Image 1 (spheres, rainbow, N blue to C red):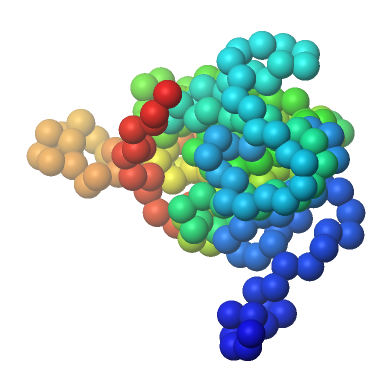
Image 2 (cartoon, one colour):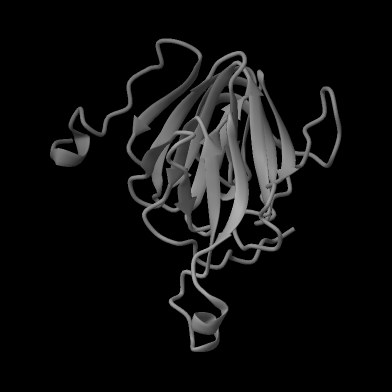
Length: 225
């Protein structure tokens, strides 16, 4: 069989080490040897002896169900083999979380992650009832985190002298050391006259980085449970 489809650009080669790698711009490959976690329904292919299991809330050896503002369910993948994960052809990125790091990320952007990472669901301080940022997942520990983003994200440095203001529907996540609060960028009179469409943003202050998608979020699709 010949043709561009069967070129080395698209052909999958055997994994050389366990764990997560970027297969291409739209897909992450995970060589599983034990256990890892992924967004439910994100597996597009696998080979080997793998089991995919959805769990309810629990601790220890049980997989917690991470409920974010978008109601994101997770699954455990166990066994030995290779699995490929993607979500709606969005761009994929791998984040290395080191001991002492903390990365806060919107649940809609989580694709998969190492079992060595710990996570908790936290209310974003200062977000009130703002859309897109009420609940986020906070990852700590040591391991890799696979993210998805519609388009190429912007990574914006934040310094104590230069806070960054982000649309709550566009924020993907931010690093440790940043503090959040709501910022109103237009007057009440302007809002009563119809507004600019940019009334309230999430203000991030401190030292670190904020990741922003190049578009505002669309309403989440209905989840089947």
